[in-house]
Length: 129
Image 1 (spheres, one colour):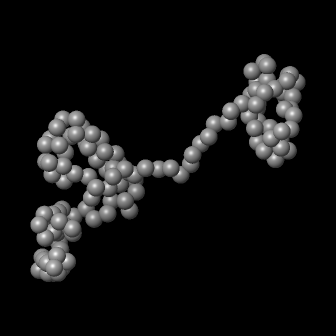
Image 2 (cartoon, helix red, strand yellow; image 1 turned 90 degrees about the vertical axis):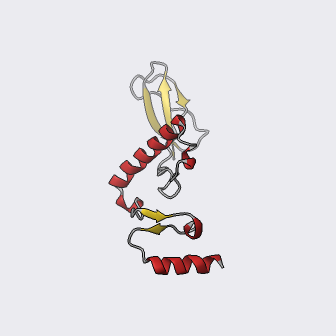
């Protein structure tokens, strides 16, 4: 059985199941007048967009176009949306420790507050060479 939306000449709307898509349209259950099929609305479920992660957002003056007002406004909206989402779903927040170094040898893996500096430096140098 296929579920369809119908509307009669008197503008009554209803759903009805038909045995096939070529079956004859049913009469209106309210006024018994002839009906026609309507286009059904399509609802795409489970299509949430978390937006860019904190790692994907710009972290420097150059990253936001030299502080261009439009770029700043754009990223501010994105950041505020992401913060609200992280409040509701803390598992999306990821590592929120402050970044101490993100250039040079730490370009691929930033040094964060609380990291062992000697170990992080050795790992970063071994990854380069």
